[in-house]
Image 1 (cartoon, rainbow, N blue to C red):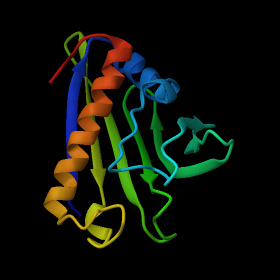
Image 2: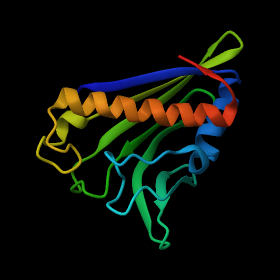
Image 3: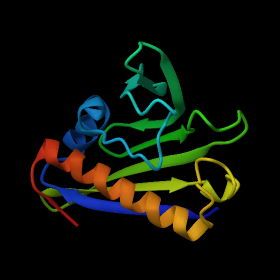
Image 4: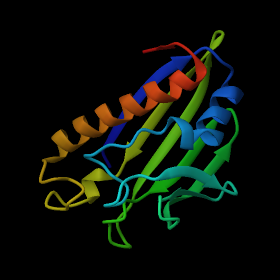
Length: 156
């Protein structure tokens, strides 16, 4: 299974980095026109009882993006990921690692499974896998930059 891997360092402990990622996701998450969660946009993301990642749309509807597989504060977070246009058997997987590097934390996002989503699927926009992954990496870099902005200056 191929993967998109993006990372940066933030000037906080792994525990604080994890907390900002999970507790503040609704504040730092940046929607992407290319990879919208639902056809009506991304809404406001949150982790529901550490069991699932959801988004609440402006009309109040809730969409479950995925199920949390791993919740290890300060170390690791993993969950399934699906967009509203995916069929029930289509999903991708996201894993975030929080690793201490001196006085900073390296936050690494690995998003796997886009090779299982057909090229002609609306979520892939007809792009070959390499182009889909390049665009997805750009999207995650932007999201991590916004996340780091909630914390303070970030470094690649």
